[in-house]
Length: 577
Image (cartoon, rainbow, N blue to C red):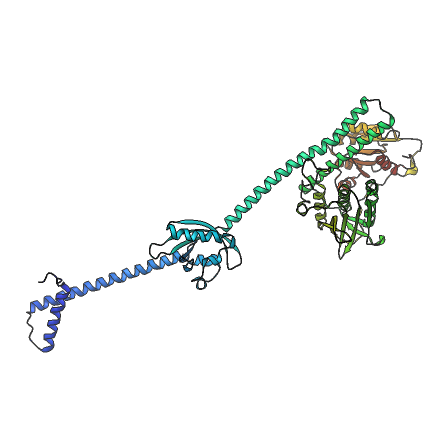
């Protein structure tokens, strides 16, 4: 046998023998094979057939496994949580899975043969181009972050991982949508920045508060010491007393602002709606600030759109007053020359109030934050104006409680040029209706009083300084002051002295507060005049006092003239203030 010839296989030999046997049978020739050889050949052929059938079955099983594996691979590829792309060197998409289709927001048929760079946002396109060039150059795994402008017009943040295939030199890309993570990171950054800004503002606020409280305190304590130690002329004494009074008023204003903002933050302020003549309120504010404006040589004017008989609305009078007062006070503070105008206009079912000035105006950047808490036109230590920077924040809170909104814009002069600032706020117009007034305790009949006698007064006060102050303020009205330091003591004194004419009831006391003490006294004495005197002075305090059974309410710090005038309203036939 030639070495180059391949040895004949077993199947080949069997086939030749079978062919020879079949040909002889067809020709009717006697087989040259013996019977035993024929049987042996047949047996071998049958065995070979079985072998072929077994091999065929193995091939079928192998094919089935291959198809199953391919199906699993396709499912894993298509429905993997990450997006898979295959890109050419030019960035053309040749294949992608279902997740990539979802990320890009278009059907697969429209994405095949399209450029992936088309979806990359302009601000990260340079990053993508460098990334693609580098990976084809280095053949190493690369990672980058891109922003994609997808089919649903949304912007998505994508983490991209890629490597070059060893088979066909194409780029195999994995896309992971990290949009939610990025948004969460951005929210955390914003929260951190807000917290840092809050800390900065609070530090500035505390420094400002220290200045705003210590400055009037310096005036009060300093000039009080001078009054004690120096021999002063009467004119000098009056000047010093005036400075002390002015400093006290300034500090009281700061304290009121702090209390108000605290109440607003804790949501303890309620809206007290009542019938209000809005014209009277605007005119009152005009007359209240007129002298102050004239002292700065400013022209203050007002404009009411409704006639007086139609200017009655239902709103929270105190809150509207507080907002208008804040705005006018600010306008006078910041305006050096020119004019200030306040008023309102009727716009459908709302009233739009305005306070316009010819001052320096407010920078555009400052307009965005001017209503925030702890903000001022200037937070620097060299600012030219006093104040805590809480007035506009309080005003905004009050306006929103009333269902309105507040804003500021440039005040446009008649010549079309901006000149100063214009603050606006709206409140809904509630139709007036009959109000159910709280049942008040009837005052004693003046005709029954004896003009020759003086009042028997009970002072219910746990603070010794306030007690002495009250007695000094009421000097001449009473020869017999009774004192109680708790609500419980007040009830006992009233039981023992049914002829008491007047009770000055402090509200905040140990053991039992003034409200509860008043209720208990009213159980056995309906006639005695009870005036609540409290340092809270918040909206709704007067209503609480009347509800408890008090005849009236006065806020601390007390003013002698106001207190005596209030008492005089109940005993006008007996004493004149």
